[in-house]
Image 1 (cartoon, rainbow, N blue to C red):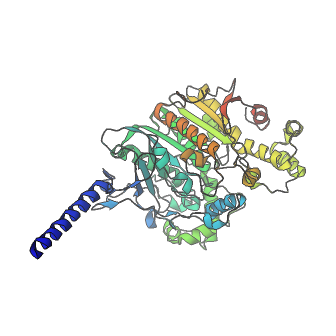
Image 2: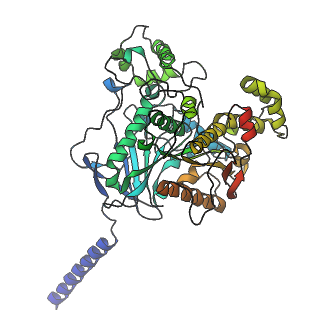
Image 3: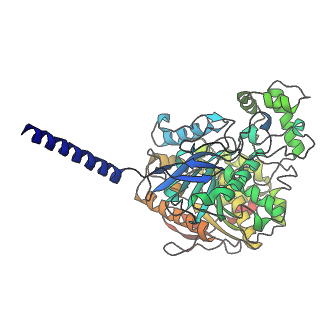
Length: 534
């Protein structure tokens, strides 16, 4: 009897183990997604989204630009041996805390402390990495590809800021890639000592990084389910401006139809709109920076490259006030000023969306802004049209709002609409938007539709500390539909969304993205004309 009972217990336990094993295999997570790309086997991870999305993070697209490769053109990545686990984000490119502080300021306006702000995984010169999100890694999926270039005044930012995580956008049926590029004095710097006489680039290293990342995408993205012949670049602020520089450089060389940047979404183009430093001017600034790190006027490239990265960054903060890190006319990657290229543009084959937020500069203006501040800005920037501009903004009672209106138009709105009009006039097609959604509550009142406010909607990544309601979620869905349709077909239009007319410049119409979604006449034309944009 005991033997029979013991046998029953053993058989029962064995059946239980078999059931548990069967259940475990039934409910176990799928194996990690793997692809062959970059000359390697890359292992990623599945992430939560409306549909399963594979994420591959921290993929090197070029050799580390350190030591003898500092201030050199990016070199192709050297494949590593063995399986590579692409499951962790790489350090951000060398920068200070400006972007973390920016997020803290926005969070503060909505009643939260700086502890809610996420930080990058460190900073380093070894930073040329990208991230991929894809809903389909099967061979032949050939999904549209969207490559994002972050903003940050070309001095800060990283590819995996909370608002740039690509899984929800990828779930719409596209492959999303976010990239990095060298920042500040590491990406936008030149010095006579760097010229070795061999024809190597001696400036615009950040633009070269972005171009190299797009080349990597074109070469490898089919392994992630993407279509290498259907790549859309999109960027915000300085990232958008860098993309525009790369497109204009290709158009200037007659390579528009072959450009990797021929389909772009430019969100809040930042930086100087028409001015570009010459290489001589940039190298004069390089002399100043060399002096700031303790090197004499006669210095070698080796000496410059041996200066610790922290010291280079510290010296860059001591450059003259108002210095903006941006592309220069070097004759190798940028050939003429943007305005010269626009004046002789042939935009055949170019597809473009460009737009701005309603209150780009409001968050940067003091609450105590006065009418005198407004008049002083007009005197300094458009003195010949002083009276006409004063009359144009006479109905704006709040001086802070009036100054924001002028600065937003001068720095972002007018340049982007000028670019869109020229593209349409010269054989391409372009659409213009105005984002004017103001978040509910005190934060929305203080900041309005602030610089960067559209980003959580584009990626459907609304920070937990941002006041978010059903209107915001509906606006996210609409913006993603427009962006994804544009990436898929070259036009934002399609069933289920309001029709979006091209921006002709003759009968301007724009798409308003906010509490309501629909077209409107462009009310900024008179202002842009007074500010020098015809």
